[in-house]
Every structure is written in C-alpha cells, then in structure tokens.
Image (cartoon, rainbow, N blue to C red; front, side, top):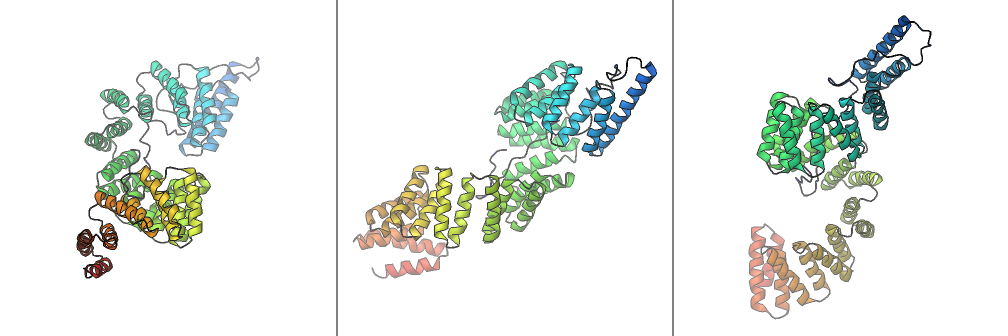
Length: 483
C-alpha cells in the first residue's frame, strides 16, 4: 500500500499490516517458553541444604510471577525490577530472562531485549520462540540478515510456529517479493485457516499483486474470525479509499479507532479520507490527534500544514512546516510549501530564497521550478522565468501550465513567434485552454494573421462562456468587435 495518493496534495502513509509477533508485549508467549528451571543456584554457598536451594528457587519463582503480573498491567519498569530480583536468586532462570526481554522491548529497549534473549538461547539453544522474537527485534532495528537467520533457525526447531512464518512472509513482502510471501502465507493458512495475522498479511500481499478483491475477501474473513481487529479494519479501509469508496473507508477507519483508541495510523489515514470527502475540519482534528500521539511525526505536521494552507491560515501552516523542517531539515517539498505561502502573501524575495533552497536539495522538483518561474515573472525577471519553465518542460514534456506560462514570459519579452509556439503546444495538449486561445489569437492579430486570429478568439469566447469566465468572455468580445 505504498504511495496511495488520494488527493493532489496528500501522500498518505501506508500502515504496517498486522504482524503476528513484531509488536512485542511484556508477557510470556503462549507456547515455546521453558518452564521455570530447577538448577543449582550459582550464588548459594556449597554447604546449603537442598531445602535452602528449593527455598531460593521458590523465591525466584515468586519474583518472576510478580514480574509477569506487572507486565500484564503494563508496569514494565516494575516488571524488570522483579525479573532482576528473580535472576539474582536464580541466574539460570530462562523464563525470567525471556520475561525481562519482553518488558524491555515494550519500553523500546530493543538492544537490551536482544541481549536477554541471547541469554535465554545460551542457556537453552533449542528455544524456538526466543529465536523468533529475537528475529523480530533484529528486523525492527534494520538488521534484516540477522532476522532472517533467526527466523529460519526458529522454524527448523519448531515448524509449527505460524507467527514466525507470518513475520518472515511480511519481511519478504517488504523486500519486494509479494509472490513468495503469498506462497508462505498460503501454507500457513492451509494449516491454520483462521490465523488472523496470516489473513491480514495475505491480503496485503494480494493487494501488492493487484488482486484487490482477493485482499478484501481475506480481510472480511479476518473480521469474521476476530470482529474487532483494528489492523483488518484499517487495511480494508485503505482499499476502500483506493477504490473511491470514501464513506466506507471512513467507517472502517472509525471502527479501527474504536477497537484501538490510540491507533495513530487509523487517525492519519482517516484524515486522508476526510480530505478527499472535503471534510477539512475533521481531517485537521485527526492529524492533531496523530501529533498528540506521536509528537515527532513529520508527515502529520506536513499534511496539516497543507490543510492550513488551503484554509488560508498562513501562520498556522508555516508553523507546521517549520516543525517538519526541524525534524527533516533536508526536506525539499517542505521548503517549496513554505515558499508557496510566502509568494501568496507577496513576500517574493522570501519565496525566491525558499524555492532556491528546495531546488538545491532536489534539482528535479518540477513544481518548484514552475512556482519559481512565476515569482521571477512577477519580479520582472522574464529570462530567468523562461529558464525555469524550460526546466519544468525538460522534466515533464506534457506540462500544460509550463508551456502556457513560458509563452506569457516570451510574449513579455517581445518574442511573439516563441510565444505562439508555446501557446500552440499548450493547445495541442489541451484544446479547451481558453487563455491560450485568447493569447495566441491576440498575437496573431498583431502580426496580421487575421483569419487565424478570429478563429482563435471565437473559440476562446465560446469556452469562456461555457466555463463561466465572464471577464475573459467580455475581453474576447472586445477583440472580436475589431474585426
């Protein structure tokens, strides 16, 4: 679902599909975790009696269970404290290492979690679940090779760990091979037809392969199995949005938020859906919620800034764009957006400076060349303006606006033939461009090509009338009256 563009100004972010275990929790997995180990305690004196060893093991187990309870209550810092105490009493307690790893992961300490899972595997190399979870963490940290190695080793030890297969399939999709992912997910679902994570990820693979109906079928099935799956609602909502079913998309994204009240991806994508439905206030409210949940989320600031720009709220828009530039200092699109606001408010020199910065960062940003060309034209620098429009055309040979505005700039410099050529190209690309017909017609009249001029102006007057452009219609009639 990359690059789902639902509006000319918006670039919605694709949500991460439901990963069976990539979102780690501070609880022990349901399967594959060793029971509390009854081993000799390393820090118990040699003369300790069996009763003392048992006492110490029981004390370790109590601390471990307290850690589990704290993890269930999402009190991860307290849980880590209990797991630490359990490990002081029993340094070989694999479940305590595993539980501490999950708590650390939940707090964002992925490196620490990987270290604890390494201890689990040192003590018990056959721990398939620990390998699977460590693979997930490696993947989140960007070490895809280590993740692949651990996922493969995990499945060699326990081929029934479907969550590991689902996560590996997801990584395969992200690597650009949805067909291979689909094959693996089909295998999972043959063994376990109601695996919700597998259904959601298979829907994602199908959509990447262009099978939108197949993707919807899998998401419908996932919701039949688990009626409150926020990921299934979100992904189905995105497909509806892509199909132009904005109302259905909003309904599903709202259900995703109901199932998961702080689901930032659902708020973000609902904002996109609201925008396509012209419900701009609701879109701004959703983007504001995203920013509350993720204060460093630059794309939410950018999208909200665009909406403020549309609403002519320049100060709020610039404030949001400045936040984007704090987070993404090299973002050419944002410099261009700020430049547009400055140009609109009459700050032509400030706009020119920001367009220059945008183009330094991205020399292929055609929109910035076109906008800079307009600013240079307003400042009277028509040769530079022509140069900018020529750059736009080099990047996009079908850019109607660039041909038309270059024609205007050439006309200002007295290059009538060059202007007529650009207006003609404009009309080749868009025969209903009334302004180009009018401009070419007036130039032809000035050069004595009266029949061609009359024809252009008559067509322009009809188009102005059809398009409801009263001023253009009146001006064209004034020219026609001269014939």
